[in-house]
Amino acid sequence: MAQGIFLDLVSRSPRETQHLGSYLGELAQAGDIFLLRGGLGTGKTCLVQGMAQGLGSAEPARSPSFVLVHCYEGRLPLYHIDLYRLECVEEVVELGLEDYFYGKGVCVVEWAERALSIFPPEHMLISLAYLSPRRRSLRMEPKGKRYEEMLEQVRYQIAAGRG
Amino acid sequence: MNILGIESSCDETSAAVVADGTRILSNIVASQVEIHARYGGIVPEVASRQHLIAFVTTIQETLSQAQISWSELAAIAVTVGPGLVGSLLVGVNLAKAIALARHLPLIGINHLEGHIYAHWLEGNNPPAFPALCLIASGGHTELVVMRGHGQYQPLGRTRDDAAGEAFDKVARLLGLGYPGGPVIETAARTVTTVPITLPRAWLKGSDDFSFSGLKTAVLRLIQKAEPKAAILAASFQEAVVDVLVTKTVAAAKKHRVKEILLAGGVATNETLRRHMASHSPIPVRCPSPALCTDNAAMIAACGYFHLKAGQIAGWDLDVAPNLMLR
Image (cartoon, rainbow over all chains, first blue to last red; front, side, top):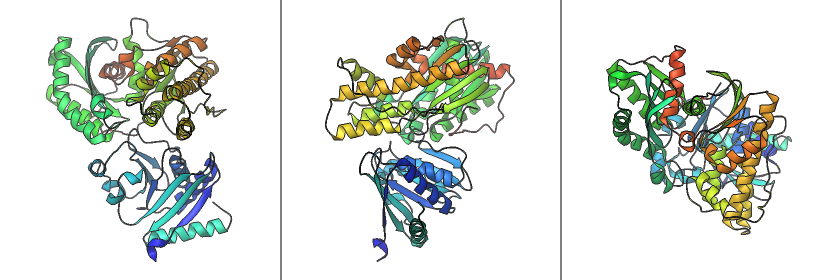
């Protein structure tokens, strides 16, 4: 069953979370969308920092809570979107994020749970949770063929000892 | 020479008239804090709509308070970034329209540089170069050496959350309200017992900052349902101030600057101002609180020095939401 596919990972440090992000950044293609959900301090920004590195951005990723969208220039532009400050779906709709979703870059959205229904149906959903002071769980759920393939590549890399 | 400043990078709609980059003739700030307090932060669409509503009155009031007419203005300076794109657009397009209609030169200003120029509005004794600027606000935490007007050497910045953002997020976690800085400072004042020592990210060998781990540490303590909000607020504030002061003073010594200039909304924090002054062998300047938070007078002051340097924008002037100080 397609919707049942997922991969559970445990990160043992911020460094490991960044490492996984960096690998996702390397795999990313134009138009890819990553939706992150998980509370404060579960490693979302940390994962995005890795993605920016993996995409070859010279500028380190920082929390965009204040301005809502940061853009990092690398192999592809990475649009780092943060919905922390928003309360309801209507507010997110008014932001007009479509320009980013259907653009030439890669999108990663923090606090995606604020508006899960408005995102394009095909995406990689990553749920982060706190396990212990250093450990975090990450569940990757691909929605659509492109992301199922990406997940296979992640599995392969992990089996090969990376990530 | 009178400059009209326009600022709308975030939730303050502000217009000001400043003479010769140093004398405030008027500085009107229409704040949306009450509107945003309901949400625990800035809501971008609400912000740009409010700017649109507030600007016309704000500008009229600014000119009438300054007791000058349109013909007595030499230029218009407007914030182009960093900030919320929708909010910036309102200010920039308004500035363009006025400049076009009144045949005035248009000057685009970096909001972060504007914050530093609050220091030129504080009397007749301007800062001496080189100076080390700590710009700490809801969106930024930057350490920059200023070697002259328009000459910046960035040293470090936050790697994750801005200092003011950490205050906002922790205030929300503690149920204290918004904006985070003042509510945490007020709660912390009620504490007489020694606060808990929270972790500090020193990032040794770098002038960067990190406040994300501190926010997470507060969250874990709340989840354990341990201390009272006021105690956590005091401990959190102490940790942020300790890191900001220690790293700023170290950088100031290393770069042999003549002065330390605090800027940005976080610079209104009394504990920060006091600790910075008492821990630094180098003179520390803090603008008055009303000039630390977002305002158009600082934009107009900065605009004056750009105008003197011949830095005038074309009609293609655009917003730059992710602008940095270089």
